[in-house]
Image (cartoon, rainbow, N blue to C red; front, side):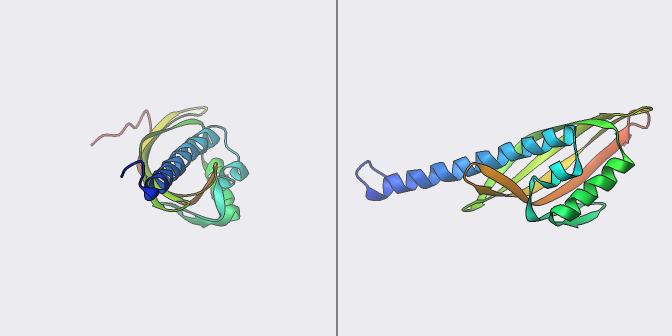
Length: 154
């Protein structure tokens, strides 16, 4: 590729667009973690596309209404205050406006009578339009979720 190659600028612009989409998708996961730190079911669901899909060991939720209901039930089961951390995100550009991000997550929690910790993986397909991103598909795989009294023995 040389400066006089007519395709060089177009190729460079396409590469920059892919990188921008990947960064926008990665940043959206941080919005997800921040939202989970002080969640309302509707705020979490708003991070997904209208027809988004959430897959967990507790079952699948489809669409914003289904995802909001999933988080409503989850928050009723465990209202503990939590902090969420996302680590080691790996982004893969799949197509214009579609990025896959695989990452690890960790959460800590404290309730009235216990402290909790857990970790696992996320696999996200994120739709990107300009500077905006929404989760189209999210798979949450819990590896450990426990309280500090029980711990996580081998």
